[in-house]
Length: 52
Image (tube, rainbow, N blue to C red; front, top):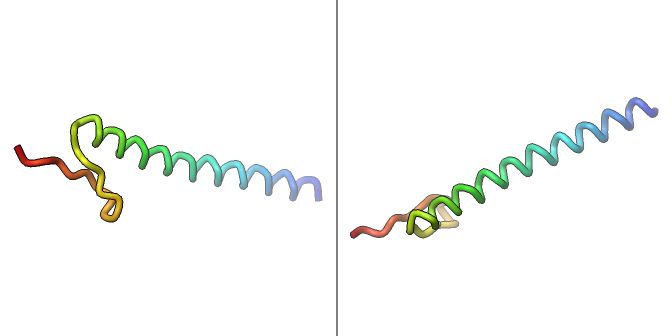
């Protein structure tokens, strides 16, 4: 039972790290878009750059 608990904890931590990495990647994309002067379209999950 101890080994099963240890594996469960390791898998939970790994899942949290992966989920955090996905979230961070998305947030970095949004930040990069805004830094370049664009607007983030949350519905389509993409950067909209204003035509000049």
